Length: 410
Image (cartoon, rainbow, N blue to C red; front, side, top):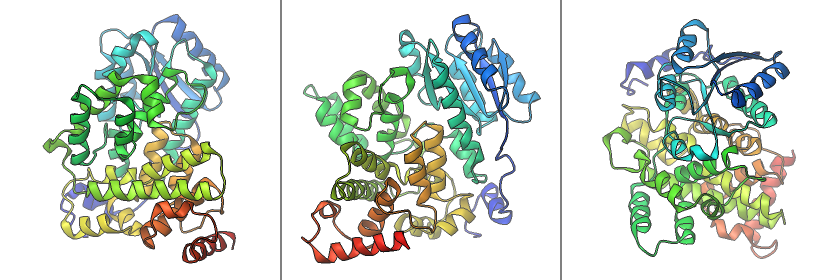
């Protein structure tokens, strides 16, 4: 382990104990706002959840930051976009720096979308105003669950501080050319975006926030583009500094290999769902889960000073025990933590976290589709498109799938 050069990261190897900041019990929430239309629903939510929430309401960003010095921890900071003196972007950026474990939530109206665009990199989630109490309660309870993670530093802090995630350089070039072209269409852009791990997560995270008031979860990139428009997609793509060839986003992760593997797992998971005659919604969610299944590796890739002797095997295969020792958590634990902060549905989070376990998930559900796809596509080399074939058409594939089902039922 001495090949990990940075002393901060070497400390994790020397002291593998669980991070004591992984909290349980009461959630400490700091709410920033002065508009009665925003504050009063928050007070109503406080009354309902006073047994498990410790809420502090302040009117300014400076007052909020002062609480970080007084309180032992802050689990969630929720701020209205219209706060005086300290701009929301500056407030959230400072929270990210001083308390990366804190979930950052922004409350805004539809007229504030121009402001929201500038906050995509520093906020975990967005809530629309007037505030729906049920939405607010569910959101805070959901992101609060991320604090119960067994992740240790340094990666736990890194998850809190990461703003955007890297994507393959070739993808950045193709998207830039497509968006700037006069004949750019939503369908063409969707086909390209849907192949990318980081950008898929960014687009779906935003469109599924309550800011857009969707009646159901959006799992299709093309649908997301239709709902939010090309202008927003242009910002997410071109304004995302991790798509730029900048030294600040240098990573030792083989991004092209990761993107190809994640897409193959996604196709395989969807194919297995189709083979089971699952609903179109289940098939779509299986694809989405496969795409983001290794999103945690993108976070690990931000850890500096990783020697080639470690980077190479991590890129080629999955050594979860080594990842936990070196980084404080493996790629699937890290990914589940990040997806929780981003507000992904619990079944997706659970399916990604399940990949970190030695236990085989029960056959026929979302976790099994993703785990079985990894076994068949990544480990055994089956073409993901073949997994959707009817039983009896390929005996070798049938036997492999039956064996996985048998393992799941034991």
